[in-house]
Amino acid sequence: MKIKLSEGRYMTVTKLQVQRTLFGLLSVVMALVVARQAMPGGRATIAKLDNELQRVYFDERSVLVYVGDALEAQPNCQPPDAKVSYVWELEDDGVLQVEDGQIVAAKNGRTTVRVTAGQHSATLRVTAQYRQLPPDSTLPPLYYEELPIANYNHTLSADDVPADLIQIPAAYVAANYYTLYVSQETFNAYLKLLAAMQAELGSSRMHIISAYRSYARQAELYNAAVRSYMAAGNTSERARVLALNTTQTPGNSEHQLGNSIDVSNDNTTDHNYLQTPEGAWLAENAHKYGFVIRYPADKEDITRIAYEPWHIRYVGIFHATYMYVNHVCLEEYVDLQAQAKEAAEAYSGNKE
Image 1: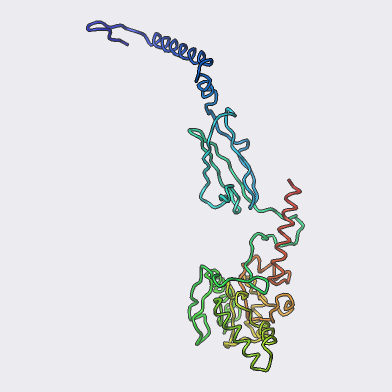
Image 2: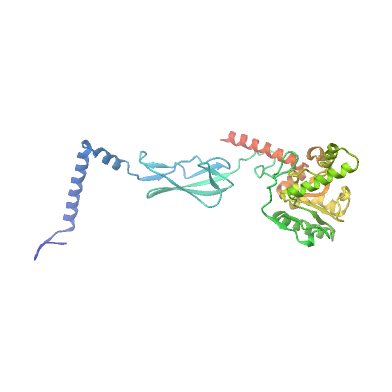
């Protein structure tokens, strides 16, 4: 390499000479830096060099966290006293969510967490799962899928309206009935149930006579029932008690949830519906499609509603099958789910 000294004068240097010169200059600079330790500002300069971030990492490459718990894994840096500010990145899969400043497992699944500090980053594989029940447990395994319920002990507000309501096509509604609505998921399951019933029975007269009811509509029905009993000679207080046997007060009706359906063969409700082919088929097969008979005959003391063989409630196939096999109503099932949650927490705690 030639270096121009003046007009017409050049100096030739080799690559080795350049490297030696640069090394000498660097040595001089480092010596000056070290010498500044005793000078104002020199200590800060040395600290900055010593604390320069070299690496970001997690102690483990993967961790397990239970749904509902916070992620406790924290990144480390090298050197340990480096001044860093971490940026956390979560996958857009809903497995982890940020709640009150913490990263919390929101549902079952596997995902990845990434932290970045300057030019350095590290990733952590996270498995989120629900706490498991003991192997010999007979409690509901899907205890974490909380089922919505409305009854004397669970009151909905006037603003509680299902988000996925659809209008039921007229072909599935009893003749001369008003417009009915139900949740999309419930109606999809009902179509499968109806198709199976028709295939097995050869035909079916069953139609829907009631589905979603608003808070206001339930108030109208309850007040009408009270007036009917009062017209029969009962006191107002007695009429209200009698009305509760068949009609819930507003906010306490399953119909407001949008996943209950009343069915009929002749546009009426009759306790003898079980004696019809359709009623008998429902009692034996509804659970296969995610439905239960919401108010069984021998559970009236628990549901506080008289037997309604025509009232089916969608809860999902797994839940419905458990309830059918173990012969429990929804109130009992919800209590069993609570017991299962406690048992799972105790079992997982013992395993850890």
